[in-house]
Length: 293
Ligand SMILES: NC(=O)c1ccc[n+]([C@@H]2O[C@H](COP(=O)([O-])OP(=O)(O)OC[C@H]3O[C@@H](n4cnc5c(N)ncnc54)[C@H](OP(=O)(O)O)[C@@H]3O)[C@@H](O)[C@H]2O)c1
Image (cartoon, rainbow, N blue to C red; front, side):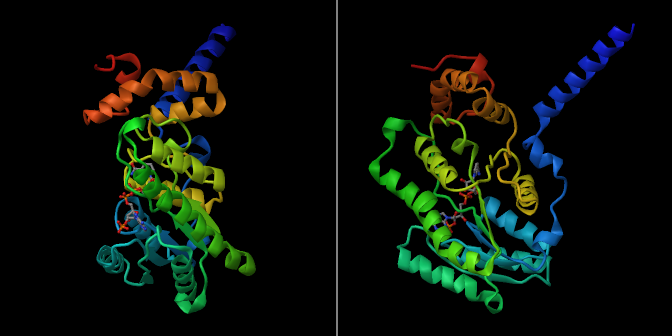
């Protein structure tokens, strides 16, 4: 009887764990942290690249709600002013500065931008650098990629981001404080058929940073929230994604033989699905139809 009870309890616990895993949108360490820590960002200077739209725009709004002083960067000044206007309308006490920049600029230009950022808010320096900007990420097969595309994506995602980090890290070290948060991708952790250059650029970034990964199908609001949880709890790495991507990330990380076997099964069908504007995350890629001719 006792054995039966133990078996039932074990089965219920396993079912609960599987249900939680199937419906989660972040890795277990990240989700166990709970809410963002306001005390870590209130009054701090947070510089966000790629703040003119998407995840960067929502991150900016959420950091403002936690009392951060914001520096918003991207190329499009008008869009940055729009984001600033929306933030100040919602949080009238917030302090927001717009600092347009192009990550593919040369080092001298980036040096000037870093100097300008550090001079804002009475030369308070930068407490959190959120590397969120990224070059566009079209889905296409490896052989369709061009050298021009390779340079364009690496100039922004890798060279610009790393140069900015090197320039800023010196003064962070002098001040004895500062954090880098890198918006990576599941494509920077596991193979991403149809996005080879984007994936290569994010793998390169992961090699440079103790990084933070994200994946879009989670809403941008939830992605921004979990990003701030990871940043304010000092997590070295966090995964934000729905299934099945999260499961594949765990497999590639901890049981690579199975993880890469799965990716091999999915690869060609995923490129095919992307070309047809189908669902590149569907489980059918694993269990269903063949790649079309
Ligand atoms: N959304 C996803 O599906 C997804 C999934 C996984 C990871 N991520 C990562 O999450 C981050 C945000 O994604 P997102 O979808 O919100 O991006 P997005 O909507 O494409 O926005 C990209 C941002 O980067 C800026 N940007 C592009 N080129 C730039 C340059 N040369 N210099 C400076 N800024 C530049 C853009 O502004 P301007 O055009 O005005 O310069 C824009 O603000 C990215 O790092 C991305 O790789 C996204």
